[in-house]
Image 1 (cartoon, rainbow, N blue to C red):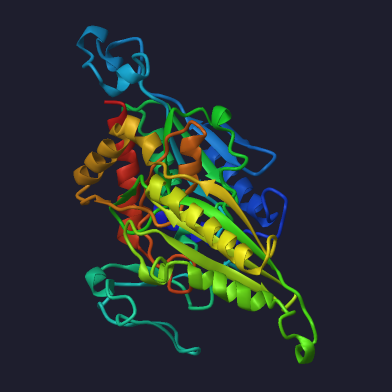
Image 2 (tube, protein in one colour; image 1 turned 90 degrees about the horizontal axis):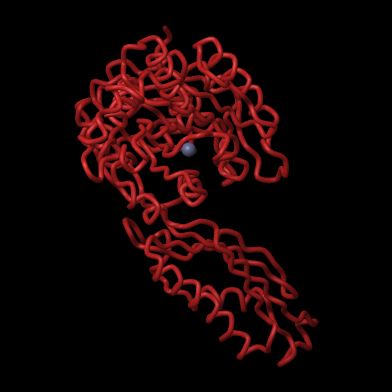
Length: 429
Ligand SMILES: [Zn+2]
């Protein structure tokens, strides 16, 4: 038997950074190397139907240990009205667990050198003596709360990859536990490892029917106890400004400076509806990229709100800003393309709230207090939920994703694994 920690340390040695510039799937061939490793390992564990799709998705199955036709499944007459099983025609729903193999292009994931800080003293952590890279309590005020834990940290030159190799290690270790303990009663369990989540494509080639689950959890969240089923409604806003460039010496009343019109566009948006000033359920407009010259400029925005009505309102306001500038500078000066990216999964989870109740109960049974928080972003689960697979997000136990300060407490890796086993049991009850 391997521990989740052993697995995790092995998986982070694979560089699986995804690449937004690539059109292929997986976006980087190196993700296939980890996919192959996971395929091998699942076969060795005795999982069923282990397969890797042409797009690099790793799927497998842990068969049910219940006899659905007999007492395990309960007597139909005794089945409580509205019980989980009743929603699925008297059978235990097939449960999925999903994690992603790639790491964020925000920082290199090559040559990760994880180090375990034993019995953390609650103070600043020197990640790299030579380069003087220090994780400071002044920057991360939650650190002293982890005093006494063993923390897996980086050497300050790469990310760690707990996002989401912690999720993979936890799911794998759960799988081994269930496969070596056939006396544990659980329904059929599907396992899925996806490529390219970090570049927003993890759900693109996810074959929900082939995966075979009725419901699932992504294991891709943060600190131990986090449980998420609300995410942003999201759109992209691409603004192109057509200016008129003329020699500045003879430009009076002739020049239209696309850069200045772009600045004016930004100034029309509500100042405080900006990522710098928002939290919780507050939405925003975020200017992500700005390029240009007098003749032409482009601005790439993202628009976010948890509330669908406010989201629609934000998109209207954004388009109105462009329309206003067109009235001022001439039709066609500002071209604005708004495209929806994904929606809040809440409306797809609400009909099966037992997913949340079960996860909360499982956490409490493992001595972890659940923390339900709205995601200020999206997850693959949000898109999968709209593809017919309701899919809230569970914690992995990690912190400070996508950067050199990423770390995960050893105890959180172990606890999350325990929680997954507990969920598998409870879904079948
Ligand atoms: Zn992730």
